[in-house]
Image (tube, rainbow, N blue to C red; front, side):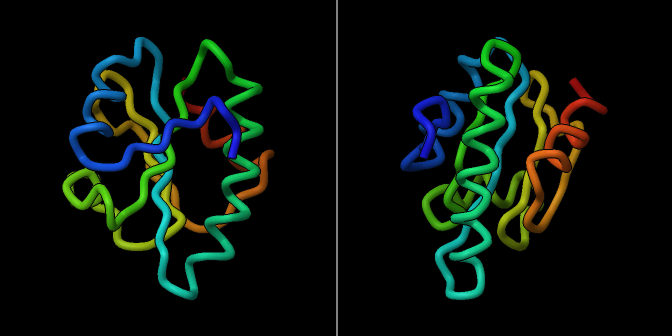
Length: 112
């Protein structure tokens, strides 16, 4: 996992990171059930690369759906991996499923 990707251990920590960020936040939601593990691990590498590439323009947050159930519910997340781009705490874009780095760039560039 890239050092630039935050990993909150609970909802309060997720909310703290969100509140402290002065740039948009890419929250990507992960799961620990068998069908989600491999796609989520693959996205760790992709989002880590994005976090490095967009340094200073984006905060990346890896959000475990089990550890952050309120955030998961708040943004209507029902599967993993899923993505929410947040500006000032408001969701401006949603995505689901594994993505390539090029697809994540396209997802972000349309909204940053």
